[in-house]
Image (cartoon, rainbow, N blue to C red; front, side, top):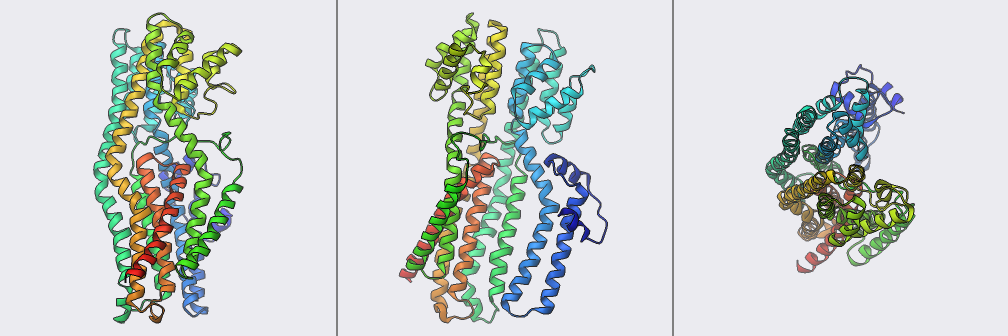
Amino acid sequence: MAGALAAAYPGSTEVPDEYRRACRLLSLSPPPETVLTASYGVAVAGSLLAAVGVWMLRGPVATTLVFGVLGLSLGIAALGRYGVPFAAEAKRIRTLGAAPSLVMTLALGATLWPSAERAAAFAGRAGDGRLAAELERHRQRAAGTPRSGLGTFASAWGDRFPALERAVGLVESATAAPAEERPELLGRARKRILDGTRDEMAAFASSLRGPATGVYAFGVLLPLAMASLLPAAAAAGVPVTAPVLVGSYGIALPAALLVACCWLLGRRPVAFPPATIPRSHPDVPATARPSVAAGVVAGSGGWVLADALVAAWAAPVGALGAGVGSALVVHYRPVAEVRDRVTAVEAGLPEALSAVGRRLDRGHSVEAALVETADETPEPTSSVVDAAVARQRQLGVDIEGAFLGPGGALAEVPSQRARRVAVLLDAAATIGPPAGEAVTTMGEHVAALRTIERETRRDLAQITETLSNTAALFGPLVGGATVALAGSMGGGERFAAVPTALLGPVVGWYVLALAVLLTALSTGLHRGLDRALVAYRAGLALLSATVTFLVAVVATGLVV
């Protein structure tokens, strides 16, 4: 398919190096030349179809169709040219979200074994994300040479996150330093990655207010204010036709808002990505049939209620918002519940590590320390510890097997942070009481990471809450009032230039698009990009926006 589309482009294409790197990062099967040329081919084919349509077809419906084909083809072309680098950048951001934990694991490895190679191997084994896999790849490439792979790994990611390169360099220096200097160097490495993460997020939060205000003004206030003026504009002789409305509010404005949201999300530095919940998790439905059924039922109900209580034009809006919103909520709610449990388990890790570390310092074994730790750890972390202790006693497995083995205590808690803790505790069980300081240090580091996450979200909260409230409540409220007021100003259906039967669905569609785009932007800025989290919150926003919009239409109509 990509090859056929590439053949439609008559010219030659020069692929930038950045585009090649993006294609490699995304593991795209077609060559970068084919992907880029195919996007240009879509633009050429769409433009030719639009030109033929202008020459052969007449009428407002045909004009709308022609502009729709042209806009869709240009949109796909832009997605191929600029969407690929953006998707790669988003993947880098998510990958680098694990940088503070990876550096901490490296530092712990260097504390337990003063060897760069063993520290890199420990960190690669402890993590299951892309960043840990990249470290392991660099380590394996350096096998058999005097190097450990840490230097090449740090250089590969240093341009995107300089603090990572400096912190990894300090860890590597610590492994070659005298024993008395090693703790100071490792402490500086941990501090460097934490300070770098905090500084980048604080700088981003302070620079976000202006662009976010622009999105709010030009994506919400101005378009909805313009919609309220359409009857007056039509009365003054300004042509306000169906193609103009559909092209502007149905295509152009949502597309512009999508580009603005992508630009803002692309500027977000290192994220704290939420845990990825696999579809194979036992608490997540294996099929999408329940969500599809819920969407069909809710959509049918939305159609009937909107038609009966508002107007016939409102039925498609009610069906689309209620149907899609319900399907997303039903499909992703189990994922959200599992993620909430993961977050709760991670919240108790610092206390658990501190308790184990203190007992190791007193000469206890890790196994004995875990038995007593459960009483000092909040739920649900204490239940996970109890399950690991019981599994070890019953099956005689090691610490890692008790937590991470088949049916282990963390088998249904997909948390990279908890996984690293389990691997560390297994290593501490092998080393014994001398590992107590390392375990305590990791507990302090996990607590520091949680503090930075809270600070970051607090700094972004005012902006993200405004966007969320606008998506779910304020935008639909203004949009519904605008439609009702425009209908009363123009005499409703008697005002042929801008009939409510056209303006209502167009503004309703734009309100629903706002609910999805602003919610995705708010969630991505606040929590990092995650498909399940964005989809779940977008579903909730769609349900709220649909009800608010239709209620605003009815309520404003009663008042005016």
